[in-house]
Length: 340
Ligand SMILES: [Zn+2]
Ligand SMILES: [Zn+2]
Image (cartoon, rainbow, N blue to C red):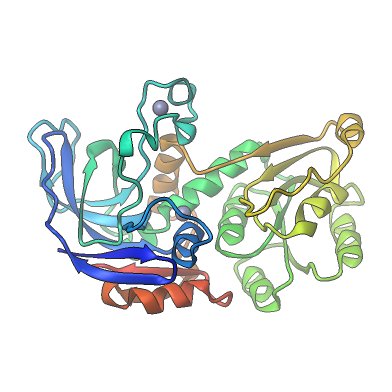
């Protein structure tokens, strides 16, 4: 079978390898689509490294082609599935408290990570969430990022009728936006990219605001939130000003979730007394648990939100270099690899 190895920074190549054989408790799946997330982009540019050579890819949809004889789940050959490509041990304190995204064993003992830029993969049956056949497999490749946004919105405990500001209007910002609208919030989104703001407005936010002039932005957010500021804010942009901005437009008892990761180590942006006096709540979110993942599957299966408009381009596996370049282009949202 063919798979794409990132062998060093800025080099990805297609290699021929043995098709994996599932263990008795595993499924063999044929990958349909896999998205290029910021993790894959950073592994490609060398900003992050796990090990080389690596088969990246963790936002995948697939079809079940073989079922190990000890699999107890209801999977059938031909099932469409969304893959939850994280190792979860189910017995560490994090797994047992509902935070399996932080499983202390997720990278231990040289376990495989990622791996979906390949024609076939073996997965444990609980990693393959069954999808309705009507859901396009391309859209299903966005299950994982959607699950991360679901986790993020749980952190701020968003309530119907509240005002939510999302800082950053990339793929992740827009997924948060679509969920926030579906949950009955008044959703504001800001970015410095005018085209992204137009897209956000078209996709239904209450206001898409230019973040290039912070003073003006703060005035606009205040006036759109009855002078109080916003109830919740999600930071999806690692820009320096984004975190500072969040605390300038937060209502008393407001909640902020730090969704973005940072390549540097930015300082906490405000003084602790401001947090104390305003009863601010500050959380972080990283990845998704299997519960978040299962909810993302339902949200897509129920057509609660549409994600096809966040797929900018699709490339065959053989063109993965071009696909990486397209994903790195700020003008695109998700770029997918069509594997089969
Ligand atoms: Zn991802
Ligand atoms: Zn665990």
